[in-house]
Image (tube, rainbow, N blue to C red; front, side, top):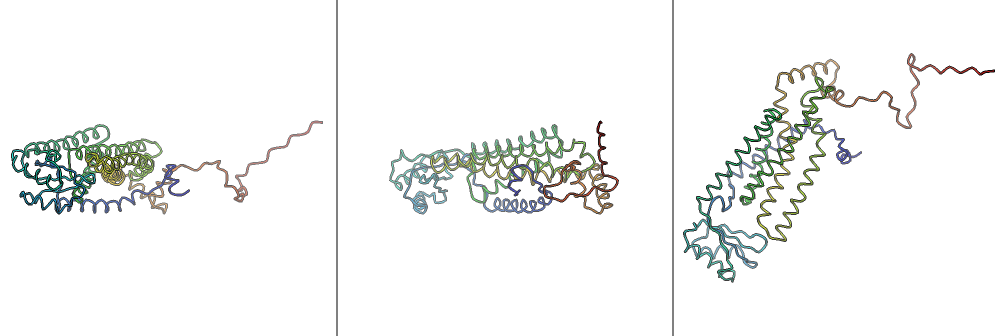
Length: 367
């Protein structure tokens, strides 16, 4: 069978501990890029967080340079200019709602540029104090989320798994926010809701891996015969296909929402929500396999009982002249059947001496 067929039948034997080393370098590179993007470019916060005024108008034949020249005449050359939904012009300036004269001047300039009336130029003003309040509440929601999740996982599983899950969630947030900073996607309340959604998804996928790993630890055939690393590797191979299927079935509708909402309906809010979801779903699946799992394995392998078990298995493997992975795989894997028939076409072995089954005695004929 090919690798794809084995994956589809959930018969994979991927050596995840070897992949963790490569994944660590990938995660480190992504985090470094994200941190640099945050420090250099910063996050493009929406008007709901920073306050100001936003104008929107239909402008199919207007360029960014023409909009910039029109705004320069009303002392708003530093305003943010963006085209959304194809031909919808969005201008954002740091004007307070109380400055009615400046707001009216910008509206008149955009009306003259686009050839529309003042009633066709929509604008929305939000004070900076209200934006600061929204920012504070968003940060508070993230902190409460982390505390509740850590408390729940500690009660249901253990604190090491809770710590590893939070590390994976922090990994997802940093990379997702870094991508937003790198490409200057606007962060709106819809984006914050998407962040909370993808954190819940990432935790769900991580808890499935941890629960399967705990189930393997309870099996009597594995107690004292396999290190925590090999048990985690078996758990990851078991849930790999499930994680792939869940990710595909989650990304496809979100991708449809992004394409339909942006290109057909022109709904900007749907696009902002969908972009964060797609990034978070992909990063969340990756972190559950290559961040949370190695993090909890690293913590568990330093427990005295698991460290002693590893030393004992390494000593046993050294005495047999094999690697510790080979000994564990022989113990974790299914034992061969004693009555298994030889494959078709293979020559039959002659019975060895002392093990051949004696012939059945013949019955005497009655006369």
